[in-house]
Amino acid sequence: MKRTFASLAPSEALHVAIFIEERNAEIYRNFADMFVQFGDPDSIDISLAFREMSIEEHRHSSRLQQRYFERYGSQSCSVTEDDISDLIEVPSLHSADVFGLRDTVNNISARQKAFAVALAAESSAADFYSRLADTTNDAEMRTFFQEFVEMETQHAAWLEQGAGHAQSRAS
Image (cartoon, rainbow, N blue to C red; front, side, top):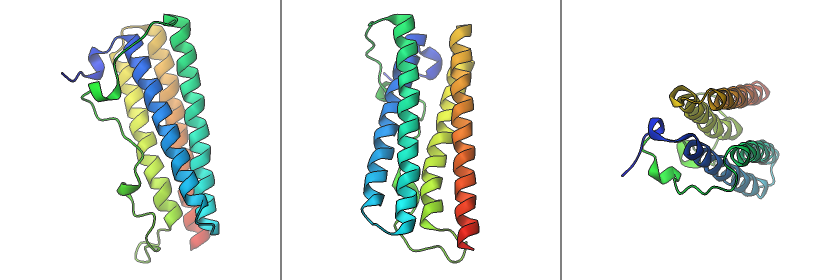
């Protein structure tokens, strides 16, 4: 039976957060590898952005793993993302046609479309950590999750700025 975020113990919430950060880091790395193969300047730019996102997600995972170890040692946890009923955004190229030609009607480049993929995932991650902060009774964990809300919000702002920069260059 699927569970809500509110029903998670702090150790379970941390475990799921670690999994999500690792999963997203791998997805971003795969996107970066895919785009670099195209070789054109826009694709290289997209690849670099996704590579940066992958590195940042790994940093998040490391911080979460450190916190888990500090609080729970090597205690195992069997809860996975599949056990959670709340939606947790997965970066997906299906949500934007990044392989299509420039959208000349709306003047949107492939790079902007790629950034939109990451922006949707980062915004969802901020919501995820915000829900964890709102539902935990542990003050230390609430503060910790709020730090991640801030980091994910900063990522979203960086992505919005990057997409805007791409649009101004393309205009």
